[in-house]
Image 1 (spheres, helix red, strand yellow):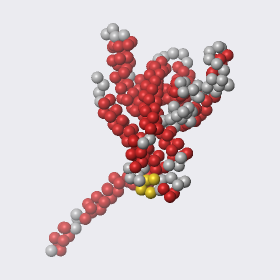
Image 2 (image 1 turned 180 degrees about the horizontal axis):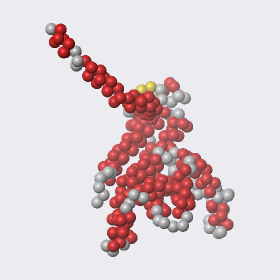
Image 3 (image 1 turned 90 degrees about the vertical axis):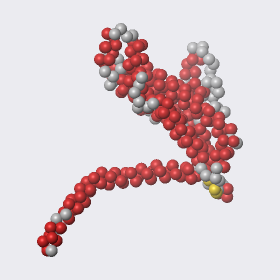
Image 4 (image 1 turned 90 degrees about the horizontal axis):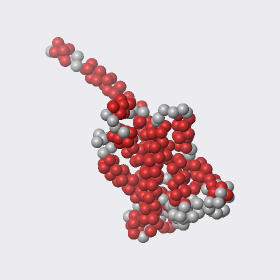
Length: 312
């Protein structure tokens, strides 16, 4: 019996080895756990707070009206608030025009600076430099350029084009193009940077083979360059569309949403509702609606564009 018991004891050491080997496998998760907890705290808590307050009547200046509202804020937005629909329509218009033009000009600039020419490094630096400027500083630059006394309109009036004292940011017929141009100056380099980075990986052998086969520059661009840039274009347009939809700093500093609300986007309306009107409950409901719209549109866009699939 003693011999049998002695023979049964050796299996114990493998358990200790298994426990010891389990620690290295868990070590990476233990190391990133503090950062993960902090990220959850700084991201999850604000998001959940927005969802919570969207179901509340919450206005710090009118505490007697605070309380559970259910879906009243959402019903008010969709059925009783015409400003919501106006700002949503303008936001869609702003995103489509801005992203489309930024992609077009960014692609053109990327193709130009991808060529070999004298001073290419300086040219690339000049093309990419506006992306390093903050939105508020960009707005300040363009406010000065559009100033009716010292800006572009003053010099155009000196040349006989237009009249003195004209302000493009105060005229409902010119404020939208003026804001578009200001944001193009900052947004075009984003597309140029991403597309140029992807162009660097296109094999020159493909273009040489296409030239041997007699393909023109246009056919090379259509059948080689564009298919290779497919995923980069899809990702960059999606990211930029989300950023442009949430654009507040430039429009707020440039126009303040005016004149007569002509340049008020949904995020800018949300900011005014929460900061100026102190109606945080209704602003949270509008934020939730904007989140759902962006999530739905992003999923549909990625689905239709077949992101990650092979280009035909």
